[in-house]
View 1 (spheres, rainbow, N blue to C red):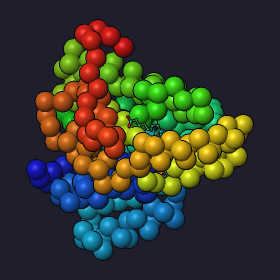
View 2 (cartoon, rainbow, N blue to C red):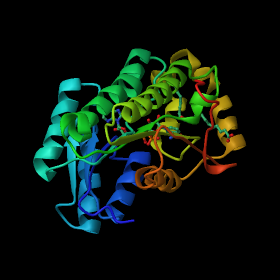
View 3 (cartoon, rainbow, N blue to C red):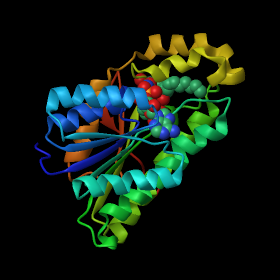
View 4 (cartoon, protein in one colour):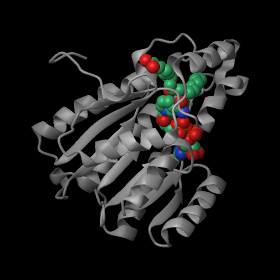
Length: 261
Ligand SMILES: NC(=O)C1=CN([C@@H]2O[C@H](COP(=O)(O)OP(=O)(O)OC[C@H]3O[C@@H](n4cnc5c(N)ncnc54)[C@H](O)[C@@H]3O)[C@@H](O)[C@H]2O)C=CC1
Ligand SMILES: CCCCC/C=C\C=C\C(=O)C/C=C\C/C=C\CCCC(=O)O
């Protein structure tokens, strides 16, 4: 499906899962704004994408998503440059149990803020044309791993918030589909954070347990996560969907009893 004339904003798009999603969006002819904290990585990413897809299709904005004003400016710059916004991927995330307040800010508060900003630029409530939002959670939301309690809490929160907003979108006719994607382990730099006391704090003693889990459950390629993401973007029947991606079952959906959490 062509996304020609569509404009996408991807947080944490400079590497890992976000980077793979940016690549897929450009392959589908969307314009893409990469919003990321890491300036060096973002500039390198943009240079590579310009070489592959031509200049003018991709922009990099350095921004810490946990700085609400900076995130607001990034959304405004996107619309100023490309004239519209259609697709928002709230993907930026960290796994830091030592600075757990920061983990809540980046993984949950910024996803909420990013969703509200996306609605300001896309919802019919604000006189806009509609669009789609995908928030990135994790299979950690379906486990209760003792090794990453705050990371797990944020990912539970992302699912609850997204499903509630998807219902709100239907009730008040925002014209915006809001879905959530939950990958199992993916081969990105984030996985290496389990090695580091600065990230894990007292939970660093479990690093070998993490590695055993990765061996047991397998590690996915970022390209498969991008494939799932493109399905959420292009399948207009999906709203409030919770997509899971695992090695054993591939891309599939979590099902809930009516009215259940
Ligand atoms: N890698 C994995 O095994 C899994 C990752 N996820 C989730 O996928 C998302 C992406 O993760 P990965 O690509 O694996 O991580 P990654 O560490 O490879 O990439 C994350 C990107 O986000 C950026 N970022 C971090 N903090 C930021 C901030 N405050 N403001 C703006 N940008 C920021 C980083 O600079 C980086 O470019 C995260 O939400 C993560 O929790 C979910 C399930 C599994
Ligand atoms: C605080 C440090 C945490 C380190 C986190 C690093 C990576 C994060 C990975 C995830 O988000 C995925 C976490 C858990 C799910 C993994 C596998 C479940 C597979 C289930 C299945 O295959 O059925």
